[in-house]
Image 1 (cartoon, rainbow, N blue to C red):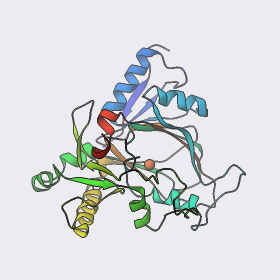
Image 2 (spheres, rainbow, N blue to C red):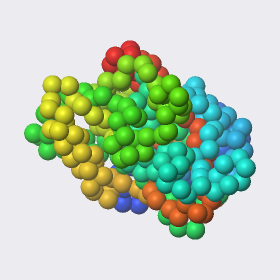
Image 3 (spheres, rainbow, N blue to C red):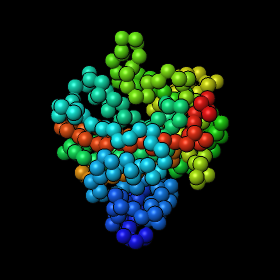
Image 4 (cartoon, rainbow, N blue to C red):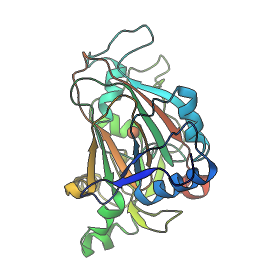
Length: 291
Ligand SMILES: [Fe+2]
């Protein structure tokens, strides 16, 4: 395939995102790859229908964007034994349900993610769309007073907070810890509410469900402000896109300029998705207290 044969179509009526067709992610030439990478930065979200990537192919594609925070992991209510899980008391279900809150991935880690490749293997009959929100446009849409207010604010980010707030913390181990990814005992990450994208220089909000306790602010006031910012970020349908999955779809998003969320589905039906997380670069994605 030559360098420029793929077709890129902007998401209609949206401030971000594009669908890319006539491309084979398993066999990208260098020039074609450069065009994909540039489009990823520009659009924030690229949807590639009909790719049917294997786990290794998905990881290889993700590795072109940078080191991996972790290789393809199942985001699924189906376990290896084939059992389908829907019991709200189960840790697996709680973890999936928690993702229904808008967020950037791994802001609770010392270094937040740069992006992710997400693919659909088994899609249930209804629901289970993935939402994406343009945080560049959300920042632009802030009124002057709010923009001035948030400009120099920072917040703590943690999974203990976000999952605890909605009652989805997992079962504790004997030593009191939680044996799931992201429940670390490093210092709680502190991140600015407004960040500048390291490659475009464009400002965007960096908030989501893990953000809490703005230092210097009363905790209730902080929660109110962050809730308002999160709500306003997704208030305009032009800045939000819900992807309805078809098996074989592959998506890559820029975790800096976008937030995303899961949406509910009938969990008695199987859903199998694969998520490869692309590590952020320490120079730009480290928390202020982990730099
Ligand atoms: Fe996520």
